[in-house]
Image 1: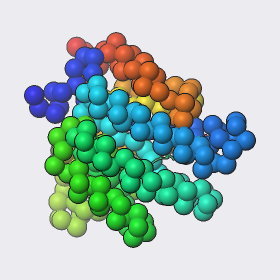
Image 2 (image 1 turned 60 degrees about the horizontal axis):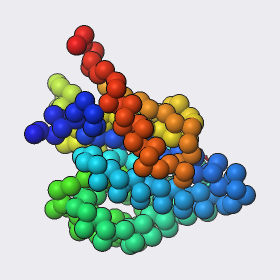
Image 3 (image 1 turned 180 degrees about the horizontal axis):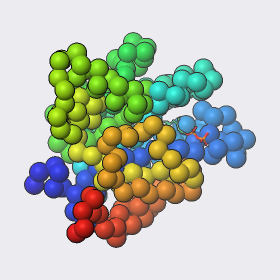
Image 4 (image 1 turned 180 degrees about the vertical axis):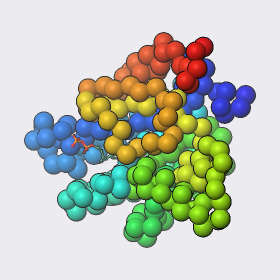
Length: 235
Ligand code: FPP
């Protein structure tokens, strides 16, 4: 089966997730923001495991946006510390579960330590053939589209098709998401995968990300199964 044909009526081949609500979760408990992100990391670990178990082919999570640099330095460094903890703690299990990890976004501003941890993860899992886990880090969709446009200009190319242009995005070769899930109560896209979400089914939930469970994920999958996708046609 081709990747494009992998989404069935019931099971999306590619699920994208905006992990929102960590800050409010911490605030409700009188805890520092870091603890919300830490609990968010635990929720993410469960969802990756679950997505892999139920046969989702691609999972993309929005872990750090180009706009997130505006947050307090302490919060930003806390998120990158967690990223290193995540990779060190979970790499063996990800590998054992045949998960292939990659990063969407501009890694150039990251510290040597962060980039080394990411390189190690990508290298170790690159031959894996199970779930593809895409972590969006220092990712912004408009920046991604501008970068792709610039790459076309630099190559002297006027892209003719969606595929020509899509091949210049961070998601080159990855099928568009079938389902976008946004927990945390907000109903917006926040500069996430604007090109790729053109025909994606959107699912919003009020549950804050640290409280998000595999059962919540299954609710989204089950609603996806009930949607009629027409891709602009009449079928
Ligand atoms: C949005 O919640 C979440 C983030 C900006 C960071 C997401 C990070 C994690 C889940 C940590 C683990 C990630 C990795 C890759 C190790 P928010 O803080 O904007 O929530 P709020 O809207 O309630 O303030």
